[in-house]
Image (cartoon, rainbow, N blue to C red; front, top):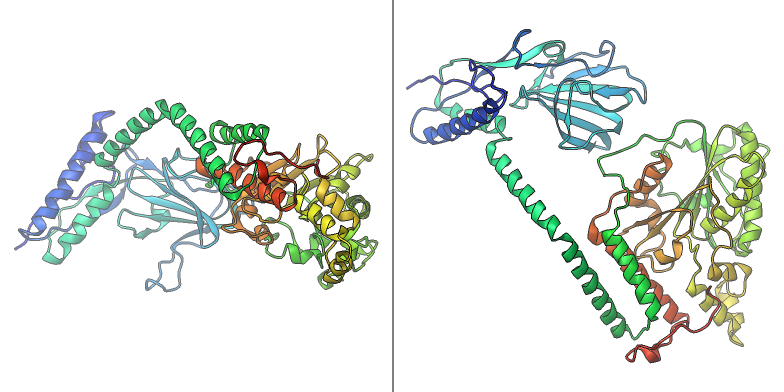
Length: 578
């Protein structure tokens, strides 16, 4: 038994009906759902019905969608469909674009994907004619999922050669030449059908009407729920703040640690600010390109560190746009550390090469900063148009900020950008514990034998924190890990700097440099964008967890009196901490 059926048009209306400005779209989608449901029922009762649709050129139909090439110029590699699913070929057009060239949407539509695929940025746009266009191998993305665009809207910038593909409602790749420069609509064809194809026909119709009226109803329900939620938001947030304060109090009672009443007030204010504050942020769908121009990265390791490159081995500097030949490791003995890969670069010849040991890193922060400042001035003279990006880990971050403040105050300073990671700018209670151990008679010799830095000038600096402030015009980023057991994020705060907290999924100090969230914060800072957006509970945790770790540090260092816990009159003991 054979039969006939009428194919649907991707625009949401049956072919042949005149367009309606308001009701046509809804009527077309309701009819589309009815047709899909009807076909599914008929599939179990009678002969299957296939659907065939053909793309035709129509330069007069006002309901058609007009597509234009996403970039200027002719493609350097045209459409070459592969002989098999995994065979060689080209499913679209490839253009010889340069890095940073704008890429535009070929026609009006809705962005249904914007992000990474296989480590490369892609954007996909769904158009009212049922086609989907994909813009691949981008350097940056300037649209977000769900955004409605018009033809010519810039969706991103190219990273080099740019690839453009067109697919129909059945996910088949089309030759872009059959679409570009034309108005495309879909017309119905009456075709004979056989049993095996009814399922494919129904599936095609269901895909065609994914944006159905049922989804619109769901959107209405979601909007109504959001409206109700917004009205109750203030009350809910206040209740959460109170609950967090109670939970925090109970937690400290269990740990037998005391927090001053004024600190409870400050903690409550920080939690409330995290919940109610409307800080500017950058959504995950935005990927800015690396900064343009000449750049040199200077790496500064931490306490008892070897080659500074080891501390930043996990940080993808190449992905951040820094060439390997433009990376210099600071030596605590002055100048730069040896690096065989830089041996052939003549521009670095005037910079002395030295090797430091653990004892070299234990000088005072001020002494180490003098040596780093000298290196920055030399590099600025050798590369006068370059921005010097100084990456400092832990103690290295304190040295980097101190040196940068010095260089920034000099006449005609080089362009600087300072990035610190897990650096105790606000002082470190555990450093006081090292001095306390070193002061015990008979234990100081053991501490020396074990290699503990107690009694060294750097320990006083770690305990007291930075003695400088970030001046206007000096860009500084301080990144801290929420669960860092050695440097609580509260101690990485630095007035005048951009402060960011990342979640490294564990209590670890060293791994935060290579974490994806750290890379994201560095990427945004270098591009001059606000920090990444964080959910509400994440913002609260970024306040409470570091405070808890900091209190444990204070208790271990003897700065907390545990006797007054239950009666609420505990206080900090006097110590070196400012």
